[in-house]
Length: 327
Ligand SMILES: Cc1ncc(C[n+]2csc(CCOP(=O)(O)OP(=O)(O)O)c2C)c(N)n1
Ligand SMILES: [Mg+2]
Image 1 (cartoon, protein in one colour):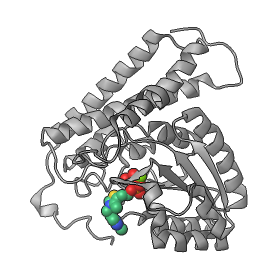
Image 2 (cartoon, rainbow, N blue to C red):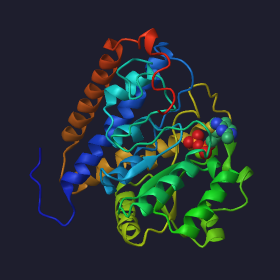
Image 3 (cartoon, rainbow, N blue to C red):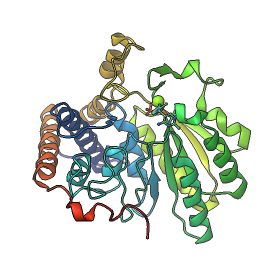
Image 4 (cartoon, protein in one colour):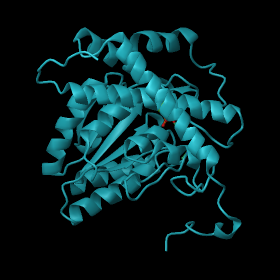
């Protein structure tokens, strides 16, 4: 390990982010493999490629902030505090899963960690996020809620309705569009009238910005400053993050709607993990061996998560109807 030089940059934070990105990627790779081994079935949407955004955002938040997301959210849930083993167990439908195995891939949830799903209905999380934003204001807290959604989700009517409410009532909701260019197999330019999705905010006179979601440091800087403002003024903001998914929409995606060259270009030239790793090496904060060792740790952690999920039993038949409806 190299000696750390003094700097305004908190290198430990950046190293932590690097490790976290590796563990997210290795976790999702294992999830993909477990699916092909038929350890679980149903839908499975991997977040591989989009780690820079997840890690930059979570690092800018406090534990007391809330987060809500769509179905591509296994690792966002881990970032918000749910144990990786519990997420894997949830995928496998096991009793030690985050929702005792009753939610599965699209429905990670933890009240304790303020991760409020995991939602399979495209855009369905946005009205819930605005409800939480209302509760934050009503209780006079200085927390915020991050509401992740995909590019295609921004074309849902309910998203427009609730952005209007959030802007009208000044609710601290940070809407983050994970613009990975595609909604399933459809290029966003074929379905959307605007050339930049942050422009949706103009209709509501809402704060808006964009960020390179493949640059975890840019995300951290930008979201830190947004959140600081939002804690005070309680106003919503629409952030468009440009990102890219390397795997298919879900595990069953032939990928005929994009070229191999496009995917490879992001993997080789834009990858968030390579980018931060290079930055650490260039600044003598890590050696190539350090990066390799951290990645190996990430692989080990993913393996442990899977072993935990394998060992966990299935829920008992007697609890079939427990935890299904809120009391
Ligand atoms: C209301 C609704 N309509 C359609 C679907 C089917 N569907 C599932 S994912 C998806 C694409 C969403 O793409 P995007 O919002 O860009 O998110 P990404 O998958 O790229 O992360 C669609 C149309 C759905 N789940 N819910
Ligand atoms: Mg998309």
